[in-house]
Length: 492
Image 1 (cartoon, rainbow, N blue to C red):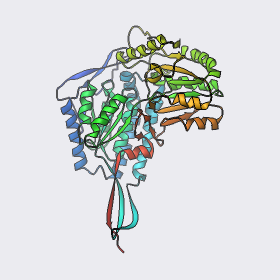
Image 2: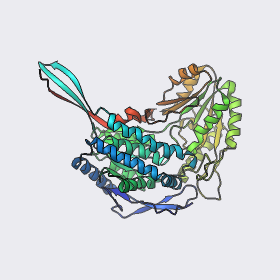
Image 3: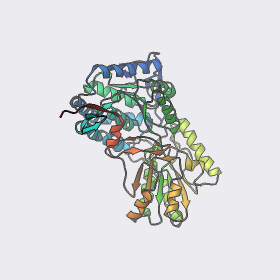
Image 4: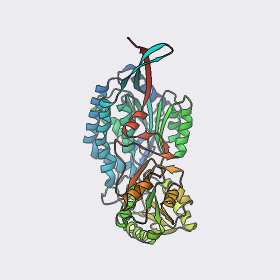
């Protein structure tokens, strides 16, 4: 499955592609067959500093922050160019991340089209507004409220959805007038480099406004970026542990952070749920993207009256679920990103079985010719709500099923029994009943029956250890801006 396309793997700093200062490179591995896709430049702290230098200089020496019409023009160029290169983007996603082709319409096509919303906000956002005169201390003052960019955004993205998360952060940062230093996950540097190449070759984005770096050791480059006090906003998607470290680093200089930190989302099946729809949708919303998604419905909380029926349906659905080659659009589940993650997932499932849970489908590594990192789509039933597998983000094609007795208050209690709070799901034939539950779930997004929150105009963020701040919508746009109030004498 090695690609024959000549892929860019160098750092993109100040409008130019270049090797790291050390000259080191590292291999990017295809998780489906363990072949080398390409190599990427291995950035060190000095390279991160150069990228921030370039971003600061670009902000200080151009009118990028204030020339809204120009920003809108070049970001439309960027959107058109990404649209034209979408097939290559999808090819790279399959090669470096194992992203199944089945989700490409969501991960790529929809994300490119959604740029129209953020590009449109450049023209409709109230960058300035005047307040009426106000008298205090004997002075009559006019006030003007202005929204201004932070300057430099440090955007740190994960491996599970590299294009989606890259374009969210880069698109938001640029639309709001910031410069950005994009640091990709070590496993998936090629998507960011491809985006930089497209921007360099097909847009008028000024040099230094968009920089993209990669590093074999995420901690080394990440520490350099998050401790550089010239970076006014740190925008991160990844684990809670790393998010906490970034927040600690950002506290030096009192810098702004937006953190999307994963989830253990509950899918509540009330006793009156439409089981044909709820079970099929529940499997899809857990297993798509190989289960490697932060907002996926990985805990199914099922009422005792329908529990046995639901488990039987899940067993049938998941046992026959197509998995394998991510290039095949018929496969919902592709490879796991790397061996370390596969071993971690295997340990969680094995320990759940040892603790008394019941494996009703999958539960073991998959085999495709002895190559690649595979785990069969898995259902773990009879899971205790406080167990490790119920409380830990597995990040793979593993669905945990929890039984509850009692009323809807009990369903809410079990669903909220988690440190995470990114997303939630409710299944009921009674819409008012579903709304009652949805409004009580401690989660940043909630989906009722066959609906899904993801859209450019709806805020996306989490409660608890799932994060701080939001992406998308006017609220997400606002995260990239700081506000200033200017007073001037009111003229009579």
